[in-house]
Image 1 (cartoon, rainbow, N blue to C red):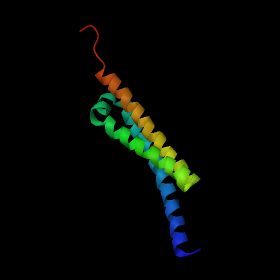
Image 2 (tube, one colour):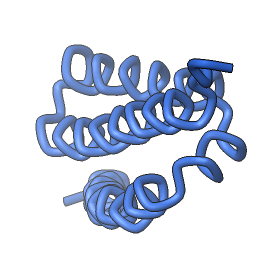
Image 3 (cartoon, helix red, strand yellow):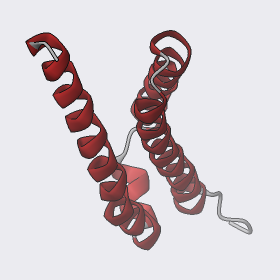
Image 4 (cartoon, rainbow, N blue to C red):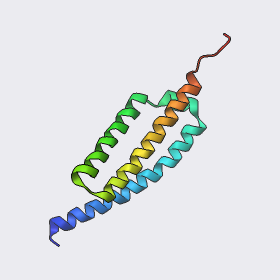
Length: 104
């Protein structure tokens, strides 16, 4: 295997490993978002979270359809699922925190 092929292989492996670690790292964040809905609602930008999620969707489509790299596609899909979970919990937190008080 030539040097550029070896480098590309090493880089792909590193991307997969760090991607899996990144996906696992969502767990503590999601737990905090569940535990502290008011802090979550106040400290996270829904616009920013939605933009990051959209970017990951584009990345997934590119890797799956253009680059056609199934392993990296799975890693990006894991990241996308984590981002979607964050967006869902942020929306839940905002609903719980900013809901109108009835009877006032």
